[in-house]
Image (cartoon, rainbow, N blue to C red; front, side):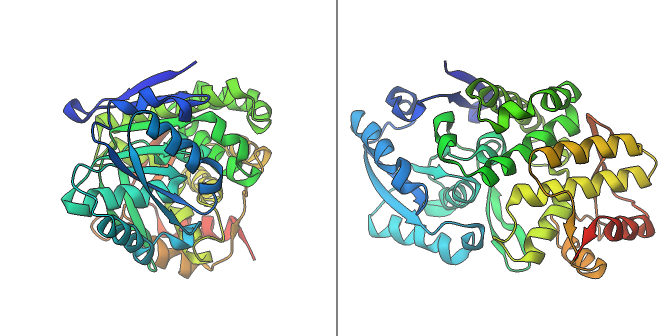
Length: 362
């Protein structure tokens, strides 16, 4: 069964297809591939698994493809690797009508999207996410970009795809830690705006960890519906969309502080969300019982609930490079209750330091 959602952005609205075996469904791609050529950007891990299958599917609709295979890992999400995409596009004389297809996880999706936004000032772009994290989060909503040594995702553009194709069969080859990293973003949706979903996850997490097809399709569709609603209301993160960054201010600091690639993005988000919950409790918004529930769910998913001890000063220095800083003030996404998040720009510094000390270990 194929589920189709729509990300509603007026003329730039696009479909999001979710289902098993979608890489074989050439008709889903045909509408957005009117020309006979495309470039497929992937990495050394995904290429041996799915590149040939996708290229054969494209051939069925008469589309030849230029494969661009990048090294795998967050540590390669930088300008040097981005330049490899441009090199290949130029060497193969790719034109403004040549779509870029991202076949991979969040790193491939973000870099391909940014290349598409900037090559010839904008070429069409298709997302085929192959990790749970990319299927529930990063492939939807048009955030693209690369990391800088001083900060994660600090260079990028809002650039929407024409289509997202989430084939759940690709999750069969996903390592357990990558599956767990995706579950971190799934839990986030329950925490920020969907209490019944959070409760469903508490009841059904074991099915997800066992890769039950029905459970996976359900969480992908529900997560994407939540994200699509937020993006449609606030595409460029001037308001509600910032709530999607629950745990990310702390999490990005963990990722860059530990060195890109040492912690998976979802692992940083999990530990960062526990820190955000702790800070919410210190503000008197949620109780110890709610914090314990949140910690328990992340822990059951096999995710870290204790942050690395970078030192309070290092955390503060890294967080000051966060994209949500406004007027020199750190802004945090915090919880009023489970299922209701808010953006807070005036956290007392002493409470923040208490959280940084309470939630870390060496």
